[in-house]
Length: 286
Image 1: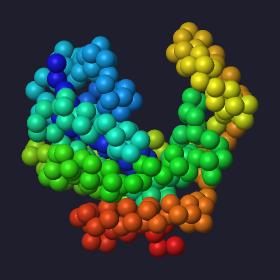
Image 2: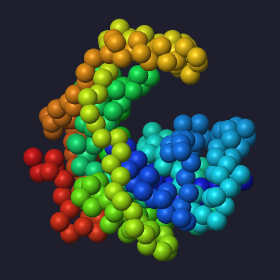
Image 3: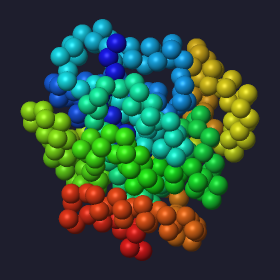
Image 4: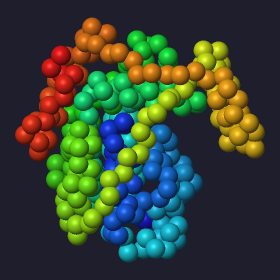
């Protein structure tokens, strides 16, 4: 069975879905419809043989015969760039993936990434992110330890294996960033139209009583099973009726407290790696 050799590791809410959809249009890059299987993070340090085989089967040429000549098979799981929360990700990829593995890492103004992350996570019915932003900060901030996550991959695979770009540059010129990545992969350049996926419209979140119920693991597991059962569609309709709007929260240095200093240090260290002379993130200047 084939294993991915190209990983779009994050960061969450930094344009990875749009980039994934653009890259898989190249004839030498193939990826399944499921962008984020999360195999190396969500299944722990020692997944079962059955889980491993199921994951690898997604990337086998038998899953898509037209992919048999693809040079790269891509896994776009953004949870892989949360190496503090999932410290086993890098060694797990190293054990299973082939020798010449490449990683693409998009990074974004950390405060804006956290705000956008809150908006998306709160609007997912089965997510357990607290509605109270003060309680949610620790969960939201971990993906912004950009330099720590970058260094984790570089220490095992080398700097030459990691391509870093900013969300801001990608947003301004997505086709150019996609072309830069393709050339870095030693593939022929290609003409690709920009994709704008996951653009936030009106987002809705669980009412407070549903959040309280989902805070109990047995209830949460039962809800997960029901949503994936034939009762799923009517339950989703009910959710739409009882849900309420969610808006991006305000986040300030004062709210982050001592965590601000690490966030700023990690962000500045990451900016120094970007091949973008004018790169800056406004939240660091406030």
